[in-house]
Amino acid sequence: MMAFAAAVRPKPRFFPQPETKKKHRIAFVCVGNAARSQMAEAWTRHLARAKNLEVEPMSAGMTPLGSITPETYQVMAEKKVSLEGQESKGREAIDWEQVDLLVNLTGLPWRSVVPAFRGRVEQWDIRDPYGEAIGTYRKVRDQLERKIKRLLADLKKSSTGGPPPAPAA
Figure 1: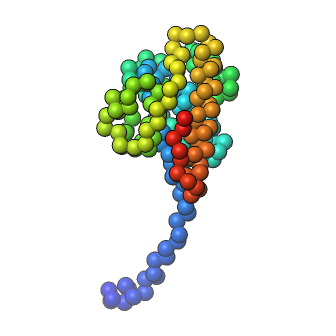
Figure 2: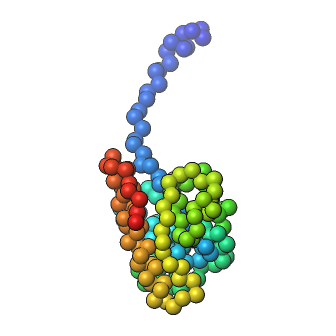
């Protein structure tokens, strides 16, 4: 009776799985996680949506301030970019084994930022606006926008089988 039941079972059907896009996990690290890295995280989320890229940006600080500066909120609001859901946090809040790309904004050698990190690293030399005039925050915001647009264009190329991304300058 058991052999008969096994013989009548329909064969399982295997349907091809839809091609899933690779989700790029990018961590931006600066000193206080109150300005630059927060702007970078928000820009990346905002611009990736427009490019239909699967990106998970995150940010952290070497010595987190514990809050995002009012100037950071102000200059990003001027560009209609939301910081909703973001908070100032330390490096320990990130699962570094899940990160594909570390963008180091600290000015320190990256090995001192996340010593055990094994993924791709970019060093971005962008001034820390903390404690500076609002104009400096705007310059930093605009620099980050340009660099992230280039980074996302490189990621989009690599996701579609183009040449591997070149390090962003």
